Length: 214
Ligand code: URA
Ligand code: SF4
Image (tube, rainbow, N blue to C red; front, side, top):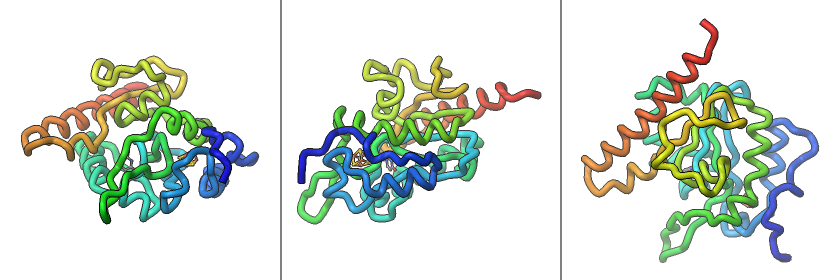
């Protein structure tokens, strides 16, 4: 196999609908991640979604099921969305990178962060999703999603939880990734991370509500 182009652009379809994008993304060979992975994990949710939520990269469970945020991080995300008053059914959920990146250790597949080249290669899919969805609010989960869309110099912990100036959507909020909850060393640390995520999602929900005509 020839070296991948590290650019998904040649794999994007001419016809731009979410279904056409999803179908075309199944065959993406834009970077090196497609080959060891099981399948492309494309975004999902209603095309008139109020919120578009962007994660990093699918995990082990997502890779097997072909759907975003269906594993342990997804359970945290669902809980935090609920606590912040956001119904996951009114959100379109996707990832900055659409194939699972992992390292094999024995029979386990250990998640690895996508590198800058892979994030950049996959960016056209996310751009095409956002062009079609034009959400009221864009929620970026973690530094990878935030850097993919806002630039590599974005400082998550300095900028999280407040509306950001951006052409991407009327409301743009960056927050921690739900998997940082799972990495907390004890219950207290995990709860502190969870509270942060809920607080930031709540800001997103409130900002959307305020931006709507009365
Ligand atoms: N983590 C992510 O960033 N995305 C998923 O879909 C699952 C876990
Ligand atoms: Fe294409 Fe993105 Fe998969 Fe790379 S990770 S092969 S760019 S869909």
